[in-house]
Length: 231
View (cartoon, rainbow, N blue to C red):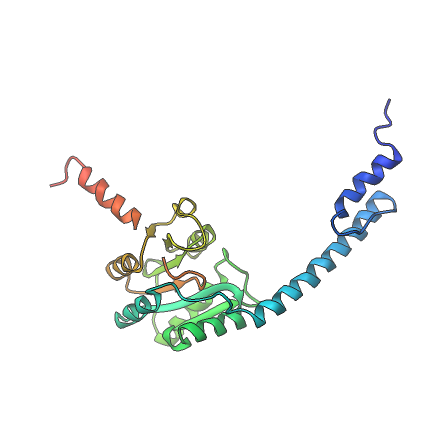
């Protein structure tokens, strides 16, 4: 009555962990699972190294700036707005791609994934950017002076962790339904420029993978116009 698993059934329950890899468990459950997990950890590590090596030597394949992005950044720089790049890609690859398509001199600071920084949505990289700019310009930037521009929900969470407002682009990696939590959702670079130049005088942090990213601004206007006491 209480013999729930046959030996064959128990063996099958253990082996489901590793069916795809071809690594089968033949020992007692707990030690065998520990052995399997060690194997999987090494397997993941090996494949990650293969991927990183391939990406480093092919990091510009099928890559190009979104139309109007470089021009947008140039216009922002003419307004004396500080512009930086914060990416989850390895720092070396981030530097290479930005230099190739934009030129590193177009930005005040460029940072990718470093060993001492946690990746987004943690704000470690953004804090490094802010510290650098404050030291360089002998100034302090408040959160209200900073905007984070991206195209994913991770970017929106990153902005929250920075403590600044988020601007999401609708033509990037995620569907527009997935980025509605942003403070602003922009459909083209001109909208981004209008939002930033009217609202910000500080730093703009760009995600490397977007071109750049205001349905929300339009909704705010409609809401204001619909108020009973609007003159």
